[in-house]
Length: 456
Ligand SMILES: Cc1cc2nc3c(=O)[nH]c(=O)nc-3n(C[C@H](O)[C@H](O)[C@H](O)COP(=O)(O)OP(=O)(O)OC[C@H]3O[C@@H](n4cnc5c(N)ncnc54)[C@H](O)[C@@H]3O)c2cc1C
Image 1 (cartoon, rainbow, N blue to C red):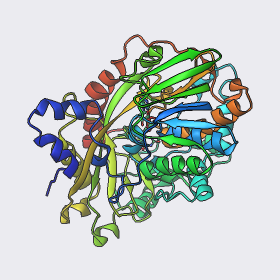
Image 2 (tube, rainbow, N blue to C red; image 1 turned 30 degrees about the vertical axis):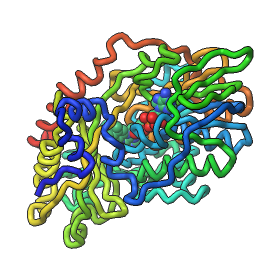
Image 3 (cartoon, rainbow, N blue to C red; image 1 turned 45 degrees about the horizontal axis):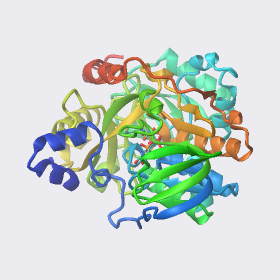
């Protein structure tokens, strides 16, 4: 049976259907449409009221802003975090829960001043940062380091090369044959793959909220429902304005991802390629099915298409994300039917069970490049003492905490240039719609066909 998520259904029933379509297309459906917020809502952070002063203001409490705030607070830097709604309201509360502890390609990093050495070194050293932070701060984020499997129809030289490269960096990553894939995943469709022992899954909403709560325990002052409307110079400091309050700060870190709808620092709004993506979660799967469907619980993705990154979460739900076709972002049923067809093809055992859709939602990623594998996060010097960490693209679960930590350490030391990302000036991209056009109109339809026909 197909069922539309309760939150989404409310939206669809609204009198003006264009409103619902717009909300899905812009990734602004209420975050409770996503699979990740708990049934019992978390305590709300109050809105900023009145005037306060601090050293650093962090604007935006997604994975990036949460990590910057947490690590600044840990280092004893006076920090105020301002979030337009509540933490994890943006892409961070809506993602697919994959924790990918590696980069797909490194070649474009050769153009960086340090050839990307510091980023790669930091990633290698902190590749388990999600799980480490959960342990350190007691974050209940359904975080499980079950490993990752990139499964393919046949051996791939590109994947083998990637595995070799990261093995040389000290990772445990090995090719697996058809029998091993069958044992791990419970399918005969993929006959080869590479298995990463590290990485796995996390509930990104709870993880982001957990980082923010830890920051607050360490002294950061966190305000929800406090959209920043202006940032103006006030002597040597910056005055940051929200509807009911202001903050006077020495430094600002902007972590607003696509920066959409923001009038302050407008140069940031043109630095990325937005892409709407949708997420789906089934109701908890029957135990009998879970005995044969991905019994290893490894997080898995399909090579080369990456069509349905699949996670089985702590509530035994199947969670995935995909890219909606043009104009199709609001169509839960279409995307659930695509998923069912994929599952029936790949795991014939699912045909004997009734799978129900529990949640359907959308969110927007912000990428710095329209070439998928050249998409690295950006660290901008926007103005004097104003920095931005944004454009985390499709891999924010590790990059958000990692880069947030690096930036916080660099700021605390008064040496922003020590961040593992190069410090750049924001540069507008020429055709912001290009990535979305390529992915939604060309790549995803092609990927669905490739998967259906079993090509590589
Ligand atoms: C469907 C989907 C699936 C994905 N799957 C994965 C995955 O499996 N693994 C993975 O690693 N990554 C995944 N990603 C990518 C990942 O979610 C993002 O890279 C990451 O969440 C970006 O974090 P962020 O903090 O930069 O942005 P966001 O989480 O969007 O945070 C920005 C915050 O800024 C706030 N804000 C904006 N304007 C203002 C203002 N004026 N004042 C105050 N606050 C403001 C917003 O409310 C928001 O909370 C996925 C993304 C999507 C959409």
